[in-house]
Length: 377
Image 1 (tube, rainbow, N blue to C red):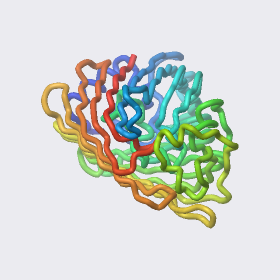
Image 2: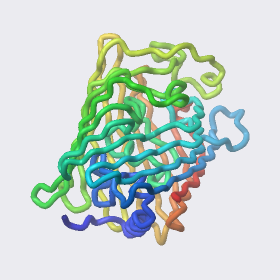
Image 3: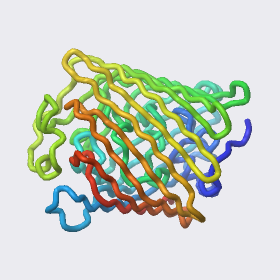
């Protein structure tokens, strides 16, 4: 296989992370396959350990009564992986502690000892692997590269998690190969609705009552990868202000005052489609991603798309901009913008400072300043 062309700073960081095995733990594979669906577990020996941590402070400008920065995300994750035999491996990613507002409802959720990934993998050959357990849902690129040290901004687009569950439990088949000298990969999964999580998902997250689908991606030219996703799913959802979708996009203060009744399951299956693109050069990286959850008899359509551009200013400093347009279930499109700076002064430290803005501030789309510190270890 040929060498992939990446920005020089990212090349050095990823090489260092591969050396200490943290990149392999987070992404499941070396940089060559990082953008392909459900990359395989790699590493030597029966047990290797790594992890990552992140702290994000926010200063929302709406509601105005918030007078000081607040913690919008706090994560400490432990990762263990290894090879049991030549054909069998495993991976565990455990959120030792997690507080986040990047949830389906936008309200803060806390979790302790919560499994993000917990699976065994059997490999017949490079083109065919069987994964059983809990894994990141293979929809788009962001969801499988979601860890804060690997992203460019301290806020996450709604497109990358609102229509589908971030993690799911079930069975996954995946593989990768080369066509005409270009890397390509595929993954297909089935989730019967088993829940291994105890806190975070039951409170504020979208989960699958049942789902099946997959993703395929291919490098069409050096540095350019395109992919597509499709799934048939039925969701289990935490409650919102109004099942019709009106007040659910209210201000943070309104949403935080309410109590939570029981979760609800959608009455029937729905189809989700998605597309993604990533282009990289020595001084820039462009990412595009869109997901759309089609309407059903009792449910309206929901989805959107975002574009993110990172340009190297000099040394470890990058300028980052992102725009997103998202249509929630109330039918009123929300437009979101983000501009900021991301610095990677050390292979173990990433600092992000930016401003997010929208004309429809809510629990899911706060407008204001964000400062993030994250690290791999």
